[in-house]
Length: 344
Ligand code: NAI
Image (cartoon, rainbow, N blue to C red; front, side, top):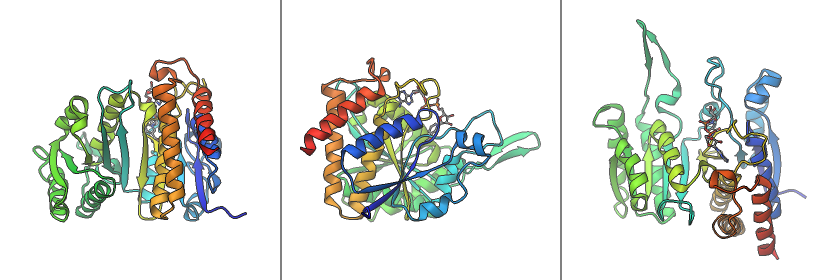
């Protein structure tokens, strides 16, 4: 039987294969109308084949509705090996990196629900670096169009998800031209959304506010580097990097992956927290449900959310990053059981 949605699965490096497989087990329990297509790429794949992605990667991707992805390793000591994540973002034009941060009762410092929307294709991540007369230089690239589309994405996201406040993050007091453009375009776009509160935070104050009063925040719109750093700060405020998921969205494709990296220190030990990957899968269900007006998928996303929250907050089936002694499989079994109960 032909399935309704075709989902690419790129398992990734380090803990990637463990947490992606765990997530697939939960998705299967949700009884979704999904056909899965395995994709190959990353550092381990490169070591085996000499290629960072399978040859026909981008042809296969054209026939998919979304991609569920594990983290990919970019070894900092191998100067020739460029980030596959950055390559995917550029090639698929995944310009909006959406990272929701919602408190978990008993683990987070406060009660909050805010979103970091990070511009995903420009800034220092273009990797335009070099030496000039013995001085190392890196180019920070902010375009008018890039700043405009991420600001519009931020305001639209706030509108359709019930947020009232949209805040631009920058360092325009120092970087008057590049961050200045990002800021100015944001406020130009804001005029079209008078029903929303538009304001600004200097990036250092944004970090402080995320820790001190996260409950005051709504949607934060940030250039690439600041968004990357602030997301890890926000994950610590939630309680663990292992609890946070993300969506990378472009006009034609969307890729869903956890906020954390490959966690080589715990890879293969069966103790990785799978919830960041599961949260990413939930974002995928919400994305598809919105894009195709598929209410059933929205219901499945809610079921998954309830099962995850109950497992962590009430049943306290926890991996070591949350202070527990549970294994990945214990967390997954609890979530699958709750999902099956809600299916019945
Ligand atoms: P990391 O996120 O891999 O690990 C930081 C700490 O958090 C470690 O102690 C790790 O054990 C813990 N942690 C992370 N995820 C966890 C989980 N699911 N369960 C329990 N504990 C978890 O950050 P690190 O070490 O800075 O990054 C390692 C590599 O990961 C980087 O060199 C980079 O190549 C890659 N990376 C890939 C990303 C992606 O594919 N989107 C994002 C960030 C990093």
